Length: 147
Image 1: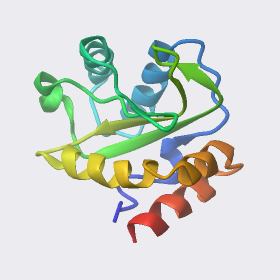
Image 2: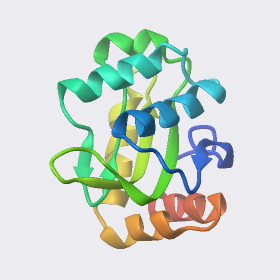
Image 3: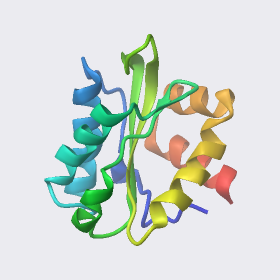
Image 4: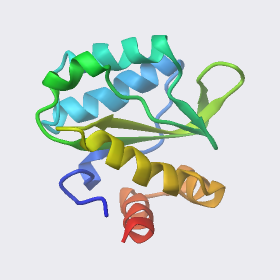
C-alpha cells in the first residue's frame, strides 16, 4: 500500500498545462522538492533520465524519476502526481495525462514503481485520475487499488 507519507494531498497538482514534457517533469520534480523528498538538483537528474530513455509507460502515463547517480539526492521516498487533462507530448505521439514523479530511497523506487504500474495498467484507473476533480479522488483511487 502507498503510505500517506509517500503520497499525500499536497503532492498532487490538478489541471496542469505544461507545454512540453520537460515542463511536466520539472513540475513533478518541484513538488518533490517542495515537500522535502529530494534536493533541488534531483530535477536535473529527472530531465537527464528522460533524455536517456523515455519514462512514458503507456496508457497515457509517464513516470519520470532520477538517474542512478541521483539516488544520493533523495532524502525520503515520495511521489508526486501531475494531472494534465489536455495531455502533454512525451514523444512518438505519446500523450501523458498523468505524470508521476518518483523519488525512491534505499531501493524503494522499484517497489513504488511496481505498485504504480499495477494501477496504471488499467486504463479505467488512469482515466479516473485524469478526470478527477479533487486530489482526494486520486488519493482514494491509489489507496483502494493498493489497499
